[in-house]
Length: 404
Image 1 (tube, rainbow, N blue to C red):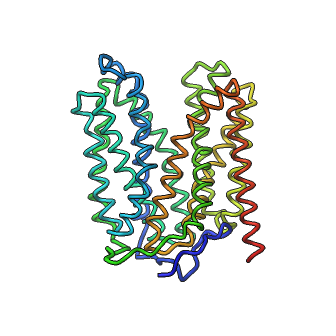
Image 2 (cartoon, rainbow, N blue to C red):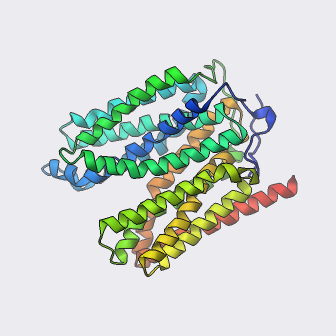
Image 3 (cartoon, one colour):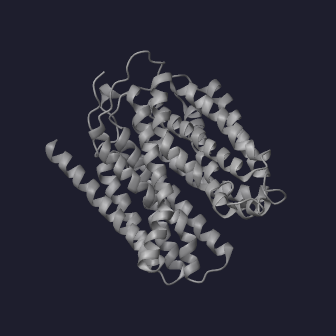
């Protein structure tokens, strides 16, 4: 098999000779893969509302102040570390085997806190949930690239971002409601992984049979820039999500209803940006990425400088519309020029870069806040990063256009 050529940043479709081609996939297959993609969000946010309850339940155990927050973030670390391993396994043994096993393990590890009486054991189970999520995310994104092409692939990549953005709001609300009586109750939702595993075996067919020989090499130079930009893009993407409530708090907004309403509006803006991707995709990632990063940067500047809630709302909406457009644009740039038997490994590395950015986001903002004295200049620093990434992607696209 030939080595993958650098994916073109101004086109969203792979060259015809590199496409896997559709395999009879229809809407149910795409909807299933988009729905399963939200399981990583479930793992990340479901227990956010019950963190205080968990801390009270294990108040007598040492290290509770560190271990409880760690239980929320450790799945993202596991995904960032192990998604490349999952990607290689996907290309080696096939998508459906890895996806089915990952979904079953997701339920096993996800429901484990229902019976665990040790906080360190809960944290370990959460890390293992991240291991399963690495397989789920890598497989779902790879299969969307395998089973669909052209405008349909673009539509499902956009829907993937829409679904994950909306599901974050739904899962946080569900976690809070289910935990009203017992902090352990939300963990029952992880049993949905077994249901997903059954649906996978019924609805999907393996597009990439198990290989016995050596895997074709990936062109590391071709992927280096997309992955570095995705790392920065993941950080920019999660900044409005993580920091919006703190920005409102800095303005003296103490009402959880107001904070929730502004956060929900930002989530809707993310969905609008992601939903627009399918229609805008023919312009190419070389155009869409600079636009997305510029919108994100401009919106974050608005949030940083805002002196009132309406201005924060406007800035958050602009930033979130940009980040909604950002993820599917990054994904098509990174994966658009790859063969079927290279796509799993590339998707694994892309997923790792994205979740590494997610994990680094609050740490970077916290460090900038400490260094610069307040949250506003820290948000300005992230906005500057977004503008720099807009310039990098624009110049890269211009260079390809000249050579083309």
